[in-house]
Amino acid sequence: MVADTMLLCQDDIRSLITMKDVVECVDRTFQGMGDGTVINPTKVNLDLGARASYPSYEGSLNAMPAYLGWCDSAGMKWAGGFLGERKRQGLPYLTALILLIDPRVGNFRAVMEGAFITNYRTGAQTAVALKYLYGRGRKIRLGLYGAGVQGYTQTMAIAELFEITRVQVFDIRRSAAEKYAEDMKNIVQGPIVVASRPEEAAVDVDVVVCVTHADDGFFRNAWFKPGTFLFPMGSYQECDDQCILTADKIVVDHVGQTLHRGALAKLGASGRITEKNIYATVGEIAAGKKPGLFRGDERVLCVSIGTGAMDVAVATLVWQRAREQKLGSTYQFV
Image (cartoon, rainbow, N blue to C red):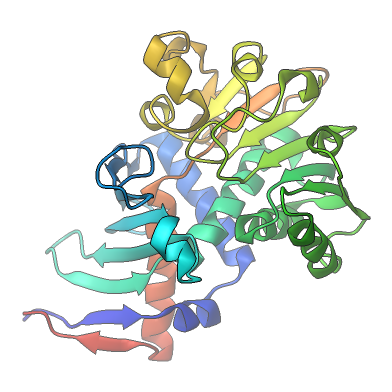
C-alpha cells in the first residue's frame, strides 16, 4: 500500500521548529558529511536568466538531492532566486520546495515549502562552522553585509552558540540596515551600529558575513584583517580575488560545489584555485579528521554556499513532528 504524501505550508513549518533545532540538525549533518554517512551530490543549476542571456527571467533554480544516514532520510530541494517580474510583484526573492522520500521503498513522504528552512539553515551553517573554527561560547564581534532575511537568520543562529557583543551592519539600503538594528536588539547582547560606508562594517570584528546578491567582489582584501573569519555566503562572488588568493586557510562545505559556484567559481574555472588550495571541509573538521579552532593572526575564508543535505535534515525533523502533532494535509498521488 502506498502511503499518503504529507503537504506542509510555511506556517506549519514555522510552528514546528526553532533556530536551536535547525542548528542541531545542521551540526549532525556536517558530522555525517565528514564521516561519509551523508551523500550529497553537487547541486545542478537551471539558469533562467540570472546570468544566461536566454531566457531573460532574471532567475535560477537549483536541484539539490541528498541522503542522510543519521536520520535515514532522503530528498531534494528545488530552489532558487528570482528578480525581474517576481520582484515587481512584491514576492520574496527566494522560492523553494522540499521533497522527502522513504529511501527504502521510494514513497514520497512529504512536500513542503522550502524558503523558511533555507533561510534558517543558511544561518545555522555559519554558526556551526564557527563552532568548529572559532570555538563555541566565545564572544563575537560581527561585521554583516546585507540586512535582508538572511542577515536576520545569520544573526539569530550565531546568537544560539555565541555572545554577540557588537554588530556593524551595512546594506546598500540604509533603511534596511536601520530596521535590522531595531529588530535585532533583543538578539544581540551588545550595540548594533549601522555603517555609513561598506569598509566600516569590517573594522575591529572577529567574523564577517556577506549575505548579498553582489557579484562584483565588493569586499576588499584590505578589509580582511588578520584574525578574521570571512564568510561570503552568496551564490556569486562577494569578495575580491585577493581575499581568496591570500587567505591563510580556505574551508568549504562541499569541495566540488564550491569550486564551481559562489566565491571560488571564477578562480576555480581558471585553475588558479583547486582542491589543493582547500584546507578542509567543515564536515572533516566536525568529524575530527582535520584540526579546527584557528587562533592568532590567520585569515580564514569559509565558503559555505549550502547543500541539499541541510535542507533534507531539517525537513525530516519537520515531517516527524508534523506526524506526531497531526499537522498539515495529505495527498494520495498514486
